[in-house]
Image (cartoon, rainbow, N blue to C red):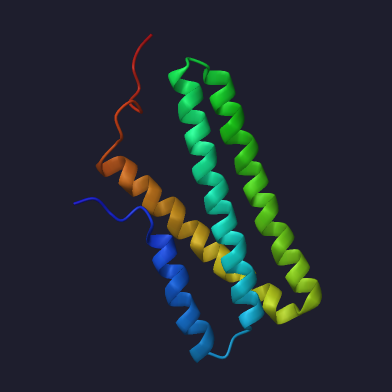
Length: 127
């Protein structure tokens, strides 16, 4: 059985309940949720573009797309945390913690999914 690849989205939804019940800053949750969903959309688009580049035989372009969007996604989340933290310190802290948790869960579930069921075409082949 494959682990869910989108478990981070389930955690994001569950975090809304935690934020309300624990009386954490909802501004922090909203900022983290918007940043997380935006970076997930960028990630999805980058995966599509890099797959197209790989199918066309252009490995350099595919790696460039992945590298540029990965850095861009990190900067997006950091900028959101910074801006929210300037506006309200506790909101910035709560959004930073939530984004760190989501990132860790996302990376772990992606790695576990890859190990249990690697996608076709991603295996290492000798040249």
